[in-house]
Image 1 (tube, rainbow, N blue to C red):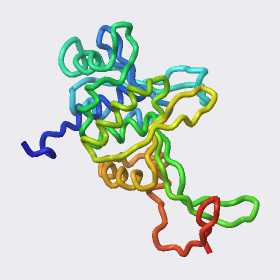
Image 2 (image 1 turned 45 degrees about the vertical axis):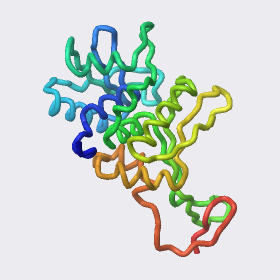
Image 3 (image 1 turned 30 degrees about the vertical axis):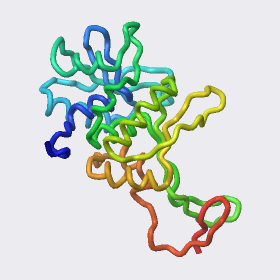
Image 4 (image 1 turned 60 degrees about the vertical axis):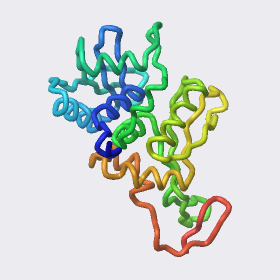
Length: 232
């Protein structure tokens, strides 16, 4: 079977968002949320188009958010894909886990969705406020899968290598919490960008998230510095 044709964009999207800013209850009610309205609206429109749910976006107060509120929508299904995928990634105590089923995240859209929910992109053009000089750092990406175990992240690493030939490392960025991140080095980040770029939504939230990659400089003259590459 043609590997490209066997990929399932909807399946990967559901897995990516389930591991991201989505919660699935034991009665198979899925709740998608985020603080960025344009991203939530994009997700809701995708679910409406592909699955036929109404998915009305609403705003709720949330004191844990800087803005004081969060956007979200709900979809419910007692059968079909939502039920199956929920059971893939929740254990008997209703805790979200990364399982061997992560191998089914085999379309770039799933990675795009997960990074928009739980990822960060650093680097690109920046300014040294002490010297006033601009410098360039090669972009890198992290996926913050907080509270998942190292064994779970290894499963994800293996799936990324098998499905996309992407190599990552596991790093404990936050020394206080001890939570591990999945880290894409500079080369892996470029490989990742080539892969997911066609699936990135053209919305302000995505443009801001991936700005270091969208605006990366290729033709400038650089001078190497310890904190990056200084532009002359």
